Image 1 (cartoon, rainbow, N blue to C red):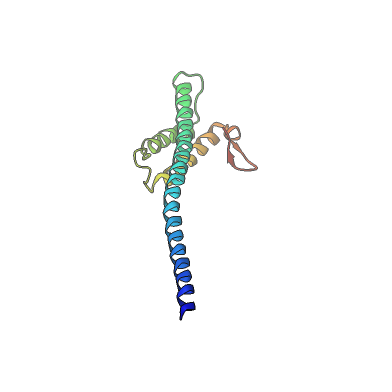
Image 2 (cartoon, rainbow, N blue to C red; image 1 turned 90 degrees about the vertical axis):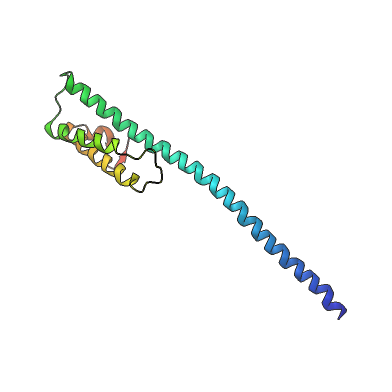
Length: 135
């Protein structure tokens, strides 16, 4: 009887310590996960903003070249420039949780490829072997 009480207390202590450790670990994980998620969100948001800014700059350059008569844009490129502008202006900058962000970004990328191909400068932006974006 005396032996059961001694070991019973040890088992109870181990159980309580294990439960407390699991609870502390879970709570610490929630805090760390939130911080890491926020950092990743800022990084990805910056990358998307940088990419959209690049497209806006290209569009402004192409329109300026066309308006000043320095370069005549091919008809296909001229047709798609207003479309890509509409897509970019519809981009949900104020709502980072909008599910349409990636869909719109993929459409913008596609329109940019069409314009760059029509202008004959696709190779300047895309490496055909890796199909990656280069700027």
